[in-house]
Amino acid sequence: MGSRSGDGGGRAGGAADGVGSPGQDGAASLMQMPIPRRPGKSGRAGRRRSAKVDGDARQLILDAAEKLFAAQGFDATATAAIAAAAEVPKGLVFYYFPTKDSILSALMAERVPAAPIDDIGTVVAPGDPATSLVNLDAALNLRDHHSSVLRVIMWREADTHPDVRRQLRKLRDQLLDVTARVLQASAPDPVRPGTIRACAAAWVSAMFAIASTDRLHALDGVPMPTAEEILNVAQVVAAGMTHLG
Image (cartoon, rainbow, N blue to C red; front, side, top):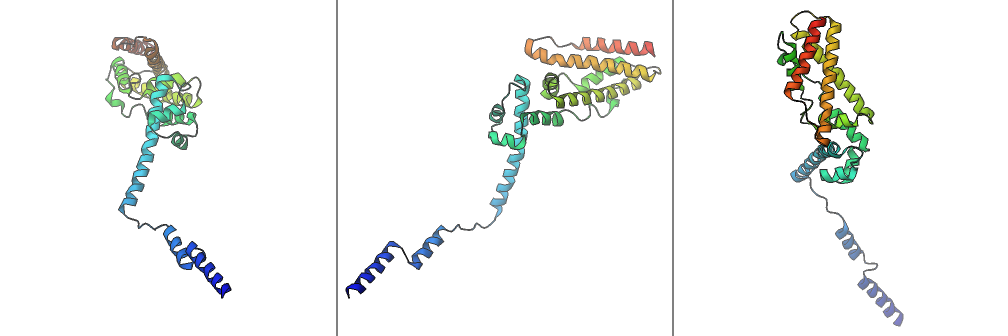
């Protein structure tokens, strides 16, 4: 009797403690199981929002980097500062751009116009190459371009970053081509191809020199060239082309 009572007490105690009770174990397991969620519109919308946020984040990072690189230089800008300015986690910056150099490369690739100008007919003044060059300069807008990549960053970082130099050479080649076509189309008389190329090179070199002063203007207040000074350069190039023929 004593033995059976002890066994019964043990079983009762075990049941009270929740040990060896299949019913209670099963109930606990069911309570711990995750409840499957039925897919609905809210889930799909959430995924769409996340994708949009991710896409926007990349542009925010580039926008922030462009402003900081222009204001304080590439070397003086920390990745953490870019993340803070873009209001994104620093890890997200590295997700899109493994290195700071890759941010600069993306700016060069994506924010420098692929072609300087589509239709030279909008700038050519027939028989007046000087006016045509001034019109071309206004259309290209290298000095006051809305993107600081063209106004400041490209000129500042070309010495130390190969990607920037490559982009600058590409831009120069494109400008040489479009300038030669504008001069050819606006010349009052036939001009030899060699003269056209030489005058185009002189104009592009002058415009590059003038555009690069934007950095000096921002740093030291160096005056920017006036419209009259631009016209004077254009007239010199046009006169040289006419004289050389």
